[in-house]
Length: 121
Image 1 (cartoon, helix red, strand yellow):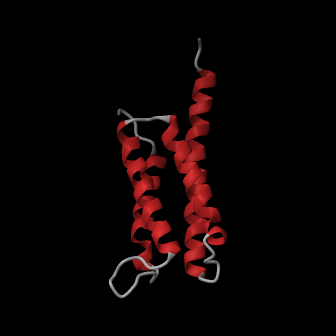
Image 2 (image 1 turned 180 degrees about the vertical axis):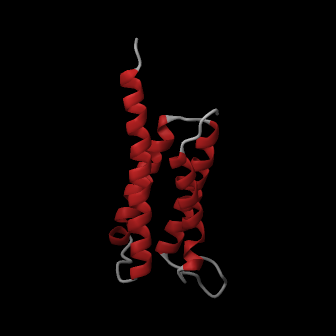
């Protein structure tokens, strides 16, 4: 663990944001639990993203970044899949969080690919 990837730190923060975003964006019910499909989507995706971001500190496996990309694609498409495009804040949250996840995890995978190419055999 001599060098840490800055992308993993940002991915971890995105995960934390997704966990708290139902409350920050007003998508909670009277019992203070997330309300609606979008809120639960953010909450559970955030748990997974934060766990993968934390796991990436200890191990640098390719599958972690691939799962982050898949979650990014899911978040990006979820406003239409779960039909919450009428709620602008939640839609933009899903689009931006998903886009950032795809870019950051893709960047890490690309750097790993370039490092493997440049290794002499």
